[in-house]
Amino acid sequence: VRFISNRSSGKMGYAIAEAARDRGADVTLVSAAGMPDPAGIKVVKASTVDEMRNAIVPSSSSADLLVMAAAISDFTPARVSDQKIKKQGSGGMSLELVQVEDFMPQAHGRYLVKVAFAAETSNVETNAAAKAAPKGAAFVVANDVSEPGSGFGTDANRVTFVDAAGNSEALPLMAKLDVAHAILDRALPLLKAH
Image 1 (cartoon, rainbow, N blue to C red):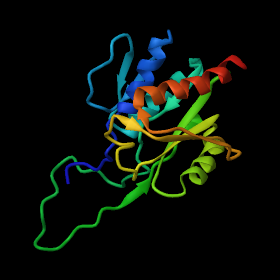
Image 2: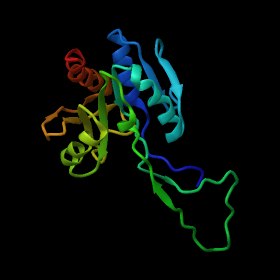
Image 3: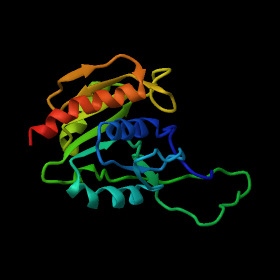
């Protein structure tokens, strides 16, 4: 095992950053993805949860909108070795995982509007609604990552916007850039309400 990750490509986050830039926003993209930096966008590389937290939480106080599209792991190894762990005979090995603290609730700004993401495989809307309030999110962009052709690593996504009260709006399968614009269309009126 060299590393443990998920299949997230970063394409959704990049699409959101590009859509916001194209609408005239001053955008900072915090990313672990190995994609080329988009023109006109400040990019901060963060390859660990701690690096991502340290890049996002302090700067959130001066932000208007935080869209957390990053597929941050729910669990991380309890111990990380700086050297290769050699095979010990023919036995197996157990890997202890610990839960990662969700740092989205730590992001605060006087008028900050937060949009969360939920990658789910079952009970998509129910699970997404349960995440909105603890994260302080105006709404959650939920997607069923088990659906073929949608979600991780694809150029398209089928999402549902869900708020803490369980109100939902399902969108059809569309290009990630179109999903990004739909997210901004829903978030921008919330910014103007402040």
